[in-house]
Image (cartoon, rainbow, N blue to C red):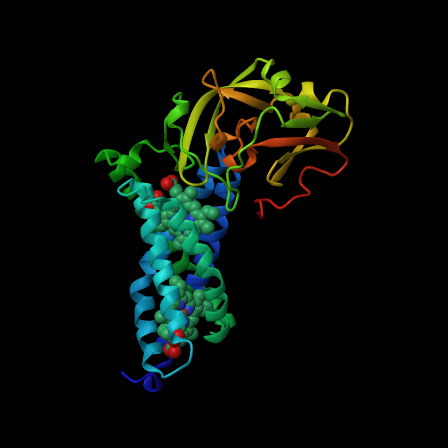
Length: 341
Ligand code: HEM
Ligand code: HEM
């Protein structure tokens, strides 16, 4: 059928599907990042919405493919960008499902989770362009009772589909059955030598000589031997946004001891690479600067000479190769929610 001869009802349905897709893409993207921000219960709540949102996108794809076919029939610039967007959304959905079912958690050096998030981020500018270049007209009648009911039915159906897939994963004993509430898979707990190495984005592992290394904290410098002499202990789980978690026995020194009586609103912990995160001053006795895990010294990949241990914080809070700990009056929330380097 030629697009020009389409009946208004088909055009209105197309607009409805496109707007629903836009809302769902936004929900999936937003809840994905909320999940990355937490290593506590809110991660699961947002992932439940996230997964249902992803399945709702999947459910709309047959309708969207009709719209897309109509669009592709028109000779217009930018169709390749739309097709690329389609490919990225499909990669995101497939990698998400592979991760959650556990059918393929690693793909060479990449984890399914890294592919999932990478494809989703790459899709963002294309979605922005697509929505701008292929504008839909939203009319007040789009908020009719019938459409609200349709949206509700889609939400309920997607939630049921998600519950169904989760039950299937568990009942059939797929590898995904054992993932943590954050979606991460257990890796080498209490086996420090086998613990995976990962870093947020661009940090490369620095080679640091302990004799030349000094930690600046609490108005003085600490040598490696001095820090190694402390034996505060903590068993804590590093939950990496790359898709794995690992529990280890960490030993080192509580930050409260290092900063002494320094007054301020927050503590900034900075790596030799320049990477840094800020924490509320009240957390100084729950944060540990570790020099050992599993009774042995850290290795370079895991933050030698000293790394931060942040119970209940996702991996990107666990600053490695720490060289400076500062207390100042900047509020702890005054930082990008996710590191930018
Ligand atoms: C618009 C883009 C996105 C879509 C359509 C999408 C969709 C999905 C889908 C369908 C799943 C599998 C759910 C299941 O069956 O259990 C999933 C899992 C997951 N996604 Fe996304 N996602 C998107 C972006 C993101 C982003 C940006 C993040 C993080 C910043 C993220 C984090 C996760 C996590 C952690 C899981 C694992 C959940 C689990 O295993 O329980 N997603 N996603
Ligand atoms: C899952 C996300 C989406 C994918 C994969 C996708 C893909 C496509 C493709 C491949 C086409 C045909 C090629 C073209 O016209 O450039 C197309 C057309 C179109 N898309 Fe999307 N799109 C998505 C989301 C959206 C959203 C969120 C909107 C608007 C809110 C939208 C509005 C349109 C419109 C108006 C057309 C033209 C239809 C026509 O000419 O009859 N799309 N889309």
